[in-house]
Image 1: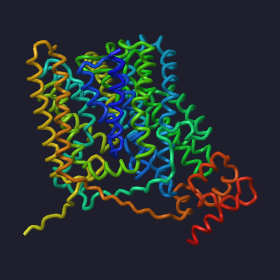
Image 2: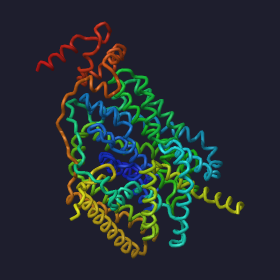
Image 3: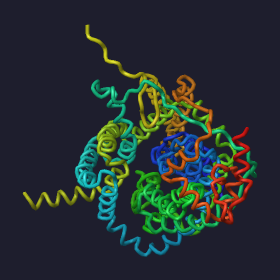
Image 4: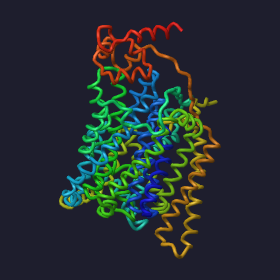
Length: 455
Length: 156
């Protein structure tokens, strides 16, 4: 009973917090969700509470990231990037509030469809769970290579997987020497902050500084509010046309089957495919937006639940290896083979999933429907980017220090510089790097075995 | 005398503009406050004997977050956002918008012919007369009032 109350609390508090995070333009899901989730895991929160928390923050952020996207065509998070073009068209037509409502409703509809669908797909896959976890090394390597190939760096990223794996394992040997065991958080947070470290590092180099410097601050356009009246918690299904609901359901199913795919990739695909079915401009813009946000939510829910319930807790895919990673591996409490998957039963997934869905939507959905403009303006005017990055630096340093003392901070900065370089200059994005982290143990063991034969 | 090269005041970090010095100060404030709260909380909690040391360490992370929020609040108060917010809104030519979406007026006209009544209803609610007035006269979706509305709007 206390677990249920705690789960409700976690979902509502998480929902409120990540509603605010989602409104801040450009915040990355993994970077913002991982630190606080790690803290909850290490503070010993029960598995059900953690599950409700994760679903709650996913739902809240996927709804509230639509707010700046619709109101000023700035992506509210990484997942909102595919929606920017259609949002800018809607804004030019003078109906940004329409795009916001369509996306927020689509987002909820997508979660409602994908929660049961993901559990069903997971149950179908679960007999394979044991086999899959015994081959997890190979599976991680194949996934890393696959994600690398579909990134913009193509074969370059595929080739980069091997040296990056060696680099990670080399750092792990240093961690063993200095700290006594391998590290997880320091490396994971290091990869996450990589792009930022690279930019800051570049600003220290005179010949590079010019490239990063700017004379003028960014300009942001904010659309006016709508005059239409709506109820406090409007039925999301009534906000969409029948065709849109159908497409949302279809793409939720596709997302569940293709849960290992990149969530952004799947979202782009769903939008393009839906656009092909709509010839008329308004129809196209509104349908694309509802289906895209529905799909981005469904890929998150599926990518989180299926590896847990279906694959026995092997972190396969962009969500399990990204925003939800601490629930799969977070030393010393969780590791592959001994994590959330072993602590939850099917009724738990349903119960805590619903708690998370309701808790997350309770705060974010009414705000998206009613307060979109005023909250966006407040966030843009009151919270400086400096404060945001500062807070993030504080969290990263604390988490790395918690894990391995000052050595953890050094390791995080080292991997951040190398990873940030690969991400920003060559397009070997952080998703490839996260997957390579999981594959690195197996890759290096095989390389050592090969080296022993070919002397 | 060597002329100093002009370097802009602002810098783009993580998708938005910041002033480098203020960013450094803000990061320092947050890191220091977080670590003070974390380390202070840890030594305090580890002193409580009835508390499991592993849990005490976990809880000290929560104490550390309080420091982070405090630091961020100070930084947000001290350093104002560098964004320039534009609020005014101008109505745009429908042809330009269609072009931005990769369409022509003729394509839109034809597409409006077959669009479902459900969609037309939504467009009416949103008062999208710039699009509705493009509906050809010889189809079921056409209503003369759409064009009267745009004419009225333009006349104002």
